[in-house]
Image (tube, rainbow, N blue to C red; front, side):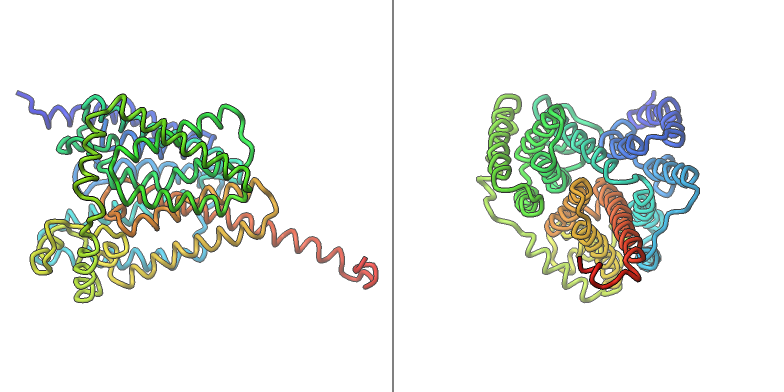
Amino acid sequence: MIGVDDSINWLRWLFYLLAGVPFVAWLFFTRDRVLRLTAIVAFLMLVQDNIIGRRYLLGGTSVAPSSVLVYVALVAEVFSQRRLPQLGAHAPLWMGFLFFAATNIVVGSIGTGFWGVNVKHFQIYYLEGILLFAYGLMALRGSPEVIRFSRHLMLIGLAVAAVHVFTAATGFRFRNARAEAGVYYAGVLDNTNSLGSLYAMWIPVALSILIGRREPPLWRFLMIGSIAGMLASLLLSGSRGGALFTLLMMMVTFGLSRAGARRAIVATTVAVAMAGVGYLVLVSVAPYAWQEVLGIAEQEGLENRRLFLFGRYALMLMDNPLGIGLAPANFSLRMAQYGIPGVVSAHNIYLDMALQTGILGLLLFLWMVTLVLLQNRRAATATPDAVERAALLYLFLPTLGFLAVGMVQPIYSIPNKLNHLFWIGCGVSAALSLQILAARRAGRMRVEPETHGTPAHVQRV
């Protein structure tokens, strides 16, 4: 008799053969870079871990489907552009970051017997990161493609939200989170931390598109629907950290969008109206789940033990400044020693990463992402073009949102795909920023020879 796991394995391989192989071939040969990148993001968000059922082709130490897809896409761009990805100043930072992460494979394996687990986590959190970053550097060309891709992301966000509301209303469960119950079931993502974090990254982008440059009526309508759907899902998730940082990022959006007071007032009114629509949808289609959210909110209030966890994990980091290894077993072994109450994450990406790669690894990570953000803002200041500024903002907001909500969410240390989205966004942002800055420098160099040798009184005129 074939068991459930055997049936899932057969289904998984059937998917690889009938859908995966043609999909990989399309990724390589398509000339539409925006659709290629959108397809990879959609696969990471909506398919992997759900229809496939597992992250890996064969086992814990083999190549993940996400690695195959991004590697194929990266090779396709190399063939198309006839050049390798230019990491530039990021290259030595990535080399050091990967070195400290790889070192902790060995550290985490000493005395644990979890060599395979360590290799798997190294691939999920770090090796796939540089592949995605390198692909992001080559994935899109110019601001129009970035704007088109950003619109597509908001449609994916609407799809994620719709699936979450659907699962809460119907009780349908994907395999990847079948142990979850009630409101904490997160649809195509694995938990509410992931959902709240995703919306802290993407709701501000949808809002920025809506209040920024003029959009065609259809896309304006879709952005309003995306905001409404994601806000409804955010409320249903009960993610307090996600809700708080979504609100803060929306304020940042108003500050950076240069929309003017009139558009800001209109957008605020629309956002409030969409929140009301989201509430009515929840009450109508998922009343029991909504009551559960209210019960949890009333029971827990503002009570949160994460500050307690931060202190305990910080103490662990002080005792192990070079890291404790990538194996989850290492966290479990130390929980009793440091009085940590049954969790294996600090709910803080910076503490988690420091324990995985050491303090030096964390510093290199901060250096890399700060460089990405500074390049983005320098390019936005340097360009007078409204389209370029809008595209840079659409890349800046989700990157900053990930780093901000990561203060209270474990969104890097669990394989929930948001780290993949983060590194893709960093790569695209770095590429566009450097392209705009290089164009500005080239423009200045063309102007200077034209004025060289011109009489001073003519130059002044």
